[in-house]
Image (cartoon, rainbow, N blue to C red; front, side, top):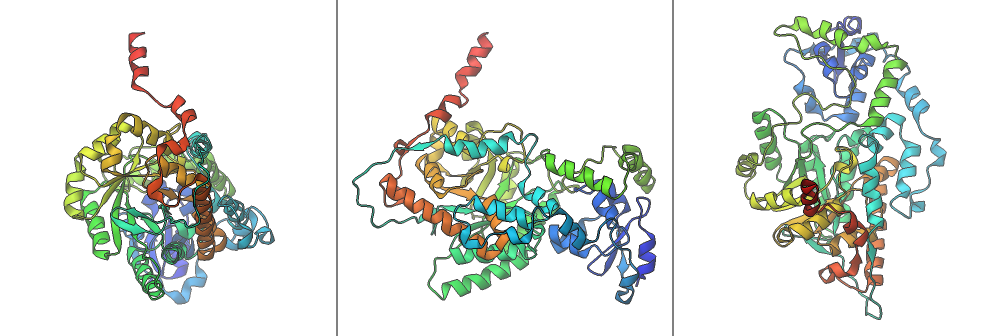
Length: 511
């Protein structure tokens, strides 16, 4: 048992101890590797960091700390001898960084469009959490392109049709779905709502929606599974349509860890399909995060030299072995080993062997060429996505990629289920994607914002808003079921005019 007074002595870059869930860890060697920047850990040095930790990580993530980090349990009777976090207290930080007063958050019924939840979330969240939810890569071009491209496709409505009864149900990967849109995966929901993934799972089940759960969840797979099964039983007793959970997978660098993760997800039993994220060999530059981390360093009195490469090397070089590779402590990085930069098409062989006969979807396809390769490698679906504009600068929107596939790899649409996500803010836009050949559309930030501002109730409200907009659009378009959608029901010429074409390459090569 360790005394709180002893833990409090280790509160510097040279010796950094923290308490997480009544256990003491020496994180000195991990400080320069922390994905959120070293400032986060240094602010918590010699303190109980349990609350801050729980907002971003599931309980088992602490097991990924370097070997020897765990020092023992803390004597809980001495917790009052620990330091307080450097700078403002937690309550003071939240009060100081909230975007606006709580009184400005509108009643949930005043959110009548999916985009309304954004302002409500911004008024609710501390600045740090808001930045996490809303940030994008580099200048934000990919993020804005996602939103703008939906408006560049217009409808071609037919009139004088009997549209009194409308059915929005569809099928996703062989199973009936009440809705043609689903909840996209979003990590660390605990930073936006204390019961993040739990509340989201309840909303997913109660609305009959499909939902993707992230590898980076702040709740364990088992907690999510228990919630899902309990809610599913409650919903089935009322005769509601069953929802499905799907799992979004980041492959870590260590093959054994990858195997263990897939087996754990498979054993949980509640995940209908595996969605392998393939657009993250490295993490994109999250610009707003970089500004935030730099400001945090200044706020706690860390001068530039305190986060310099020399300072990092001085701390971790004596730990043994060759001197480490030195890099600027600029934050915005994944935890060491979380993202594999070595994953290739060949890895799909062992992933299939481990996952069995349940569906596999590749998340992050951005060209017709890779869509064709996905078909050749025997997956069941592809998700056209640029990661919500958070990865590649100037990446194509999912709609642009969908049009490229229609033009240059049309066989894919008949043999794979094709999903799209990114920038959707209106239920009517779901219909545009379906007309162009998509199976269903992922919705991310609107649900995340709704969760942050109102919890489960907000997510359910957002689903209702999108559903109502979709059914209205179907009636005004002149159709009553989704099996009636056709490409000629929309005009995508403005996007087609800017779409990549192979003949452009040939012309350049001749020049």
